[in-house]
Amino acid sequence: MINWPQEIVAAIARRRSVIFIGSGVSRNSTNGQGTRPATWELFLRDAAKQLGDPPNVVKLIDQEDYLTACELIKKKMGGHKFQALVQTEYQQRAYAPAEIHKHIYDLDSSIVASPNFDTIYDTYATTTSNGSIVIKDHTSADLINYIGGGDYRLLLKTHGSANAPGHLIFTRKEYAKARTEHRLFYELLKSLVLTHRFLFLGCGVNDPDIRILFEDVQFAYSEMPYHYMTIPDSEVDEDVIDVVRDSMKLDFLKYSPDNGHKELSLSLGALVSDVEAYRDKLSVDRKW
Image 1 (cartoon, rainbow, N blue to C red):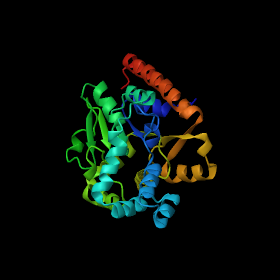
Image 2: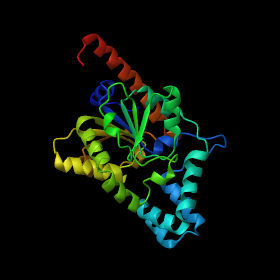
Image 3: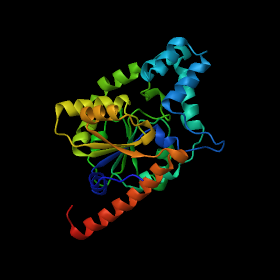
Image 4: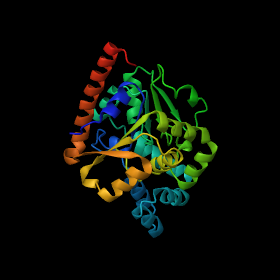
């Protein structure tokens, strides 16, 4: 089980946290046919297979250059067909939420962010909150009205949603365009890095959003606080971890990936209890 640092428990309890959920969280879900949502890599490999596995595309995927690989796939396949493929995979398959989504919701963080195109957590949170959760993405001009917390519970779709495939950030060109046209969105994310604690769940250290965001802030503000990422202990390379810890101010919380990463879900259930106990103590001590 993960031994949660007091810093992250306190940040979530005081609603000064951003819970960032990646494709590893969505992989806990299944639909009626027992299918799980594809990771970015699996989606691109399946798309490349439909094109006859072009060698240059396969090589880019092998090198984990997913943005460029996706750019080539979209050009070869055509924008309309590619968007239909995204919607089929991440919306039409009707994935059901898993226990891990419940735990994330029960943490009651003021902000949850996700680059996932699927709507699994979106649907669960909207239904459970009776529609009171606010969902925004990189194109939202009024985001600044909700970023400060208060009574709002905000879900940030940092790469867009399969609900609006025309606004997805999936290729290298789309990524570069978004960072220029929606500069305020990325500046707001940087401010959150300085004022909130991020907890990354189901993410990888090579995610371009995470790398660019945290390296930019780290070298601009060397005194920024440490943030946290859960990671399967089977994927740990201590040398890489040391580099990432220094360059991005990320600390890593290891867990066993056995039994479908069950330990992560159980640990999040324990974190919910820790956060609730901290909030109970806050209500008594009144040290907000």
